[in-house]
Length: 540
Figure (cartoon, rainbow, N blue to C red):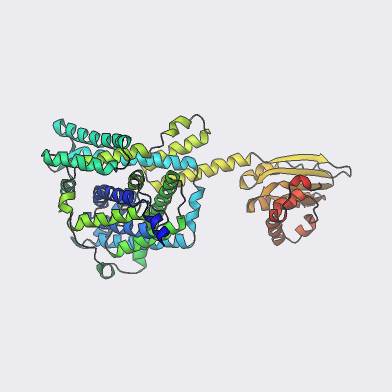
């Protein structure tokens, strides 16, 4: 028991300090995303607390931070607006439709975990991952540029004069502390120290700069002060549970669930690489789904993993579940007890922290390898980065995977080969090499000369793999062509699953397929567990 506790508290100091730093960075992000979605700041803050707390305890990736995110907020805008239009003025019906949508989103995500769909994140190619982090770094950077605006006459305009230079100076100081402090000592969390130093300069220097409090008030909020989240009984009173409601919120819930899972699982992979450990993607799907259900029921806007805050946590030394738990509880503490202090934190300090996250997030090595990787991978990398910025993460990643899959299919389609020879008995043998699938069917058919071939033909698949229904159909049609010409064709070395499908398609294949095969290469490929000796020891 002592050893068990020791292992889990070995990094406690770093987890706690890093969690407090993350909590400070969560405040303006959650508030900003709530404004984007068109809801009260507390809706975003409650989401950040509940999502972060639940996923930290039950999630599949210790050290990863979850909360309200911009990728989800931009989808929620139209949902909230349409929902409000369906109710009376001031009723805020859109807010309750949002809660119902978040609950349905959570159910979909939990189903993804139950059916173990999280493993499909492995299908995301590395160029897509690089494009994702580059695009997300750009999105984070662009989102921070809005902090260089001030409200004049009710309108947001770019800062000028002294206000701009003070803002730039404080941001630069924050970045300088975060860059230089680790070179002096690694025992202090550089982000937290930078925030405290810059906050002290602003408070004791009586500088007139934007703070978290002014940021909330400029957005129409009344401040951070709030109580504990309450169960939203009004969801059941105001949102009719019928087919029309499902048809309205269903598409939004599906899109939000997809974006949330993609962003969470890709962040999980990124944290895996940074920490050289392995997370559990299916467990993360279940935790994200459960967290969103609870969040929707208790008045939060829903959320997913946050790459920026996750990187702040990892770079601050946070590795265990304790860091995420501390971040969530500290955020709740800010809401309940320390709202006045947090409202005094200058926005410039938080912008500086996020700029350092951008620098750490962007895959600068992608510039170095552009002329060393296939051109198709360059296209994927650039396309995913661009689409992440222009649209959203889900569209970018799905597009990147589709482009990569099409390129892979095209390259493999060109690899189909047929070695031809004539035996002494006059039988023509076609030895097929390469994968046989939908993309290589045309090239496969071109290898055969049905009319001019001799009476007996044998097609050997020992170096080929029949991959899909299109390949089975091509083999079926080829046999029929030979039979129409009055010729005998035999198929050899087909895999067991392929033979089973062909037998099911037509009984005549029992006469066409050669079952008795005396070739260890074939048996080794079909049943590798039965062969333990090197191939060279078997008699060919």
